[in-house]
Length: 143
Image (cartoon, rainbow, N blue to C red; front, top):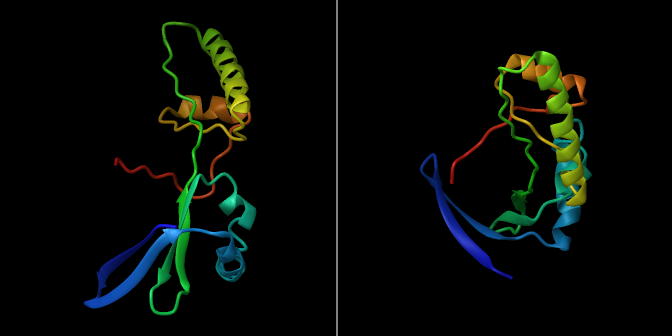
């Protein structure tokens, strides 16, 4: 199991932490952290399900978990629409796109389909088809 050390300067205090892969022995401590701080925000299963690469950041002196997390893939539905067509035709095309996208997402065992919307009209249409707003704000980082 790989383990990495990292030093961060916080208010001119050096804090030494170990970064390592999350392993099953971390789960009880993570459940306690979740129950203490996050029980009213999301379920523990929502946190742990679908993570493809998970990490534990621990205090190198005590071994206590400071943070744990990782990456989870999501399926995003993307589209461009020819606005020369009538609203009725575009709506019908949207329904067809969503049917095909849902089929593909299910085929790859994804349980959610995401859409990042800039057009208020599309937002209203997608909400009518079953999309809902996420808990919290969505952020993106280029890497």
